[in-house]
Image (cartoon, rainbow, N blue to C red; front, side, top):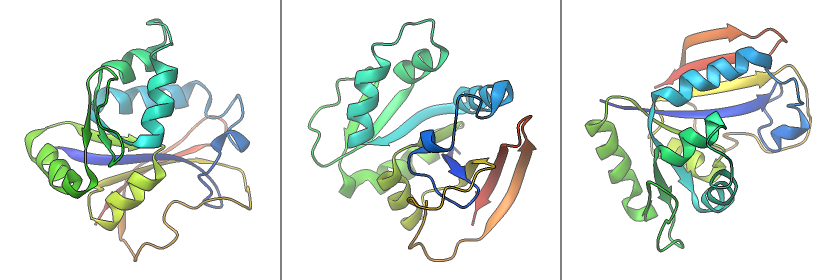
Length: 181
């Protein structure tokens, strides 16, 4: 059975919007690259929303094959949850309507053995959380307080999180992985 994993960059005070404001050029250092590479290698499917699809499909298809993340994201199977996108033309992408998405994600979890990952698509992640479709939460926390900005789950009912893995990176960034129950 597959596992759905939602990954987010976050400030110490819980802000996830505009990570470029707290994730500078040295964010995470080389060890963060290793964490992300390990995570990417486990993804069999990547779930995104329409806005992220529009941004990423334009950006990543123009990156060279020498870019490791471009190679991954361009080849991995992608499920785009959208009621407004008729056809996903990005390599290995398909569209699923929101009304069908919960059933499709449950089916993918039942059929797969790896992870079904998502990150960056806040609307999709919040919807997945409200529908109990997130099995694991991976937070990459910067030792920075931002103050203002969007929080990951501002209106979600209480969820119990069980730590699975914690890793302190060389510059104080924390990689925290929790099972969601």
